[in-house]
Image 1 (cartoon, one colour):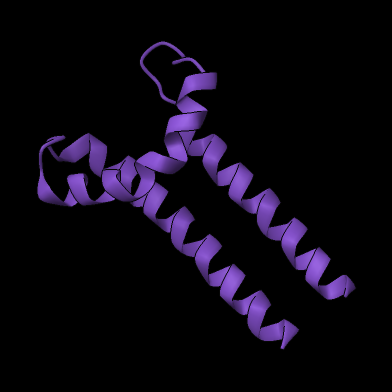
Image 2 (cartoon, rainbow, N blue to C red):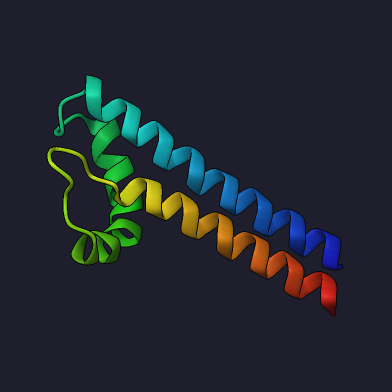
Length: 86
């Protein structure tokens, strides 16, 4: 049972990280009004908005996707450690 929960958490963490990376790459090539970018923004905006309120832009660079990836990884490892400790 714990292994199934760990696999689900791992899959969700990897999916979020993949979406953040794809969104960051597509932001260089596609218009912000492109349907694919709009769909990704609708999914990722609730996760990135709190980070963007705290972390300011560094020049022209938005570091919030990188911070989100780091937070997802930390949360993933914390949850996996917790479930395996049970």
